[in-house]
Length: 435
Image 1 (spheres, rainbow, N blue to C red):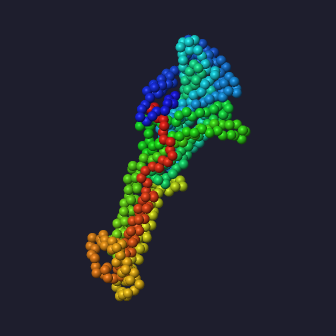
Image 2: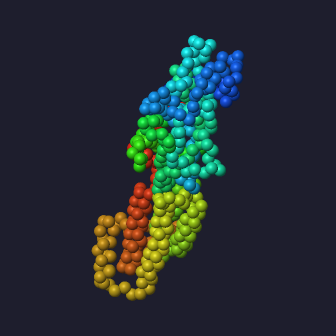
Image 3: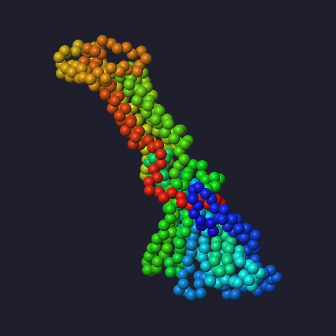
């Protein structure tokens, strides 16, 4: 029908004109079901239909005069509307297919029939290929059959049918980069009854409707690919299988702001807490609040993030790691408080720890680490921090934990927080239509 490839930067008036002409024919010509064989008619078109269909035509026999000849079926595949059912990993798609073949028994000379070059006939009256979707996740209450289309027949016997079908298929879902997740959905088509020698199928084009009203508010198709294979049955007959691969990506605007945003804020909260003095009251209170908030938000994400599939969203792994870091910070804070309590005891000058912390504090790295003050509003530098080795050790531990915490968060952010789709070797969409 409209099996023309459209570049992204232009459209084709010829395709639109052809589509409109076909729609006019299919909607304004009487169907063949109204023909009654053996009944005379003054209408030239009805007489032509009677001559074609009432002279021994058999709709259940392949339209070839020689049994050994193959019917070549060409298919153009046009995706109109689509959506993705996250709960079932199910692609929902409405497809407009263009099926064409030649019927040896539907020929006429237009000059002898009032210049009629095309007829609109019902699929119930002519031979129609047993072309079907193999991989449908079928649900009879929700998935209607393809609309029984009218077909146009040209005077040279070329039959063109345009069925509109609602289909679905299970997808290879990957939620690891949620909300920038990418899903690949494969649909296989072929014939049940006819082997390759009887009906040979060729997929010409796989196109996507460019109309905005047909698009999905949450999903975008970034790639449409096709392939053709041949399989051998147990009785050594060859069958043609057509494959259409659809690659979907999520439009992540809302999810990124509403879910990933708070996760990053909780991570920044831990980074701020780690720069507080371990003995301060604020650090203990904020660590308790942080741990409670992390686990509460993990529970809340149970109702938001996809719960099916083998892949866990990386942003949820990031949040879980952040919660573990919060618990580890609480343990280290209590340990550091115990070290600071040693201030009440008499320090042993010349001890191994004293010599170790003293020599380290004189290095340039230690000067930079110890020079920064804590982030408490009422924090004041005391003389103990300069002369007491337990206090110096506690401050060094605070600084070391803070640096390690920042490094871990930066690494987790680079590895687990997505900031774009990973399409890989996708071929893109090479054909567009305006329906």
